[in-house]
Length: 474
Image (cartoon, rainbow, N blue to C red; front, side, top):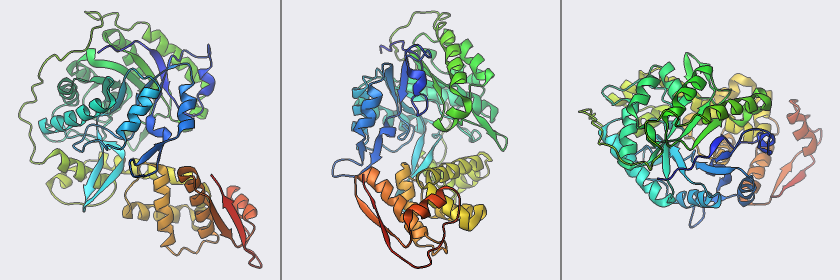
């Protein structure tokens, strides 16, 4: 496969635009996450719809683009959703991306006849059956996208499970049998080693380095003794040194990509990010310098010996059990009992809780502030936990908040203006997602009510009820 050498880039997020101006920072490529331009809008032919203006804006940036999926991982037993693959391919084609990638994990599980999303990438079953399941899913995705395809190495907060094969051997077996590339996330490997899994050195010794087409680097943070892949800071010095040492060994490296979440861009600062990119550019210039052969098309090398490591459950049973436990629900059996003893499960549950609460706070900020004003933080968190325990996570924040709005209606909370504020924010979401126009009625001046909540103040109750109408338009 011909992987072009594109250089150093960033995952495109809001706030980085000043660095994309010519000559400001050594950014030669943008990594685009396609589902950030989608909205969940079920129709007769698809579950999703592309936001054309946003995609066109990104296409207009002068940097090269590569496409990296963040919603439909390929390391599980469930086949790719056929309604998302054409949109993924459309983004790849529109941006003329030379390759595409997705995570080697899963985020879908099944319970009680219902499929649900876990909201967090979870680790694949690392057995021969797990390899076969991932290979099948990857091959279907490759066939649909029709460009070179790579899988990203996953962070894993669990301890190695019984006789599962090592992290590096699992990835090596998958990419050899699927004949695909590796997106090597060095911060994920660093986090895994710090959290008690395979060392980075041993991991790298087990994977085919000529299949590494792309590197991800990022910063993280600590939580309850675990190091998180939080994309919240600059690259740790240990990871930067690791990158500098590894890059000369990678004959087919096409890109080094720095990741940071938009929430943390102002805190870290554009000046510091620019210096980080300059350092990565210096490392990029040393790529392939110690390789024993020149860059060549990636070919299959060998069949990986996985030994006798079969476990008494299938990949799907692993995914369903871990998925159920991850979202905070209960299930029984030996596997559930064993996983329940892993301290990393608490970290996974905490991250999923935080992601879901973050979605609600971001999309329903007025509703969230109103609940905090009248219920307080402890009771608001309790309310959220009850909702999360009753309703599974949703992939898209718009779906998450719609479910929360419906849940609030059933709670009979004594919070003034709650039903009106929820109806207003729900109408805003529907106007953006479905292009719908909606009218919301208030028993007081809505400008005064909403502005008071936005300032963190309890709105004044009306002395006499006088109905107002707010029209929310697309």
